[in-house]
Image (cartoon, rainbow, N blue to C red; front, side, top):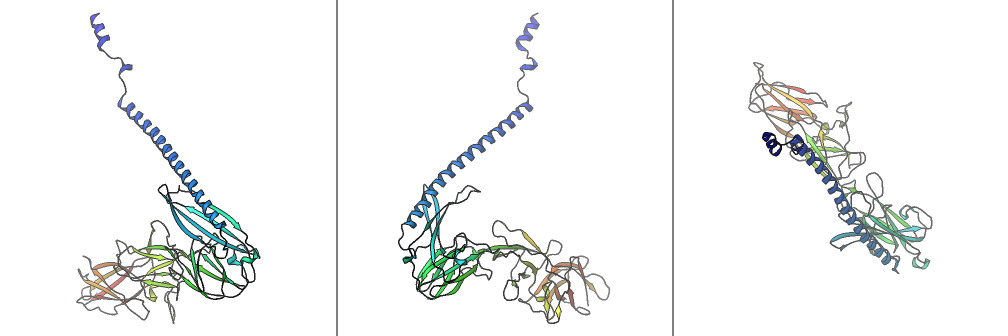
Length: 431
């Protein structure tokens, strides 16, 4: 009896043993999931609240900008502008654009024809701030101004400057300046139009200037001439888009390319002959400030005409059935992907002409050969042959003279490397 009472007092039943380690871990996992959900909900609520406050401030700034535009009495001089304002520690960018609409009813005055008069002007205001909630639109406000006919002088003329991107779509928010008898700046509207009315007839220059933008000709601040005549609108058009980047990889671990091989990019719009070559070193190679053509760029290694798979001389194409291959888009935001540049994968076997055995440690070099025109001199030290007398390397397509230091090449030293995805075997016999 005493033993039983002792067991009841000091012993533990199975139901009273508390949490096991597995139960504790499960409880912690469930608690962490719940807390993560709560934290996410709180963060979203804070973001939503701050975004709502910021949008309210932006709406007030847009309304103020609209009121100032309505208060103007000089409708001809009313121009677009960009300004910043700090409210509660947040910097807001306020962009105002002014668009004139003609009596012909065209969608944009930049698309109109001569002889029309200005019927009204639309003032558009767009407000942004750095910490806008992702996926939300900027705050916008618009108004129409209908000045009397006496506000416009029929003896004056106009300039309509239109800015289009690489896809031919209008670019909004680009500052455009005209310089002549007066100097004025307008910001392109959502139709890509910057319209300047009431200009004294004569010669003007028109300039687009936006950091991080470039034309198809590679110009960052393009300027075009415009001649204004009485009662007419002079059209000016810019192709202008965000700069793009190409990241090019040459060779690979099995067939390394010489460090200083130039690269060439091709597009039919590149002047004067549809392609441009660039010197440089290393791989990958980055080409910046490229216009992001919708048709993209073809790429190849080397600067000589016979390095181009579609290159041709007066006698015809070097490789009649070859093509430049895939066209790649220039990346305008984020990290660009690495483009594998097609090159000749060459295995050079350095053999003793007398014995036919491979020569170990031979210093091999290559120099471009033939009559194909090159933009840059091309000769390379390729390295040394391995224990079998072999050397693997990537080279541009074309004709190459192979030389071995301290040795005389037996027979012709010239080999033609034609576009191919397979390894090209080159046997160099030396004495």
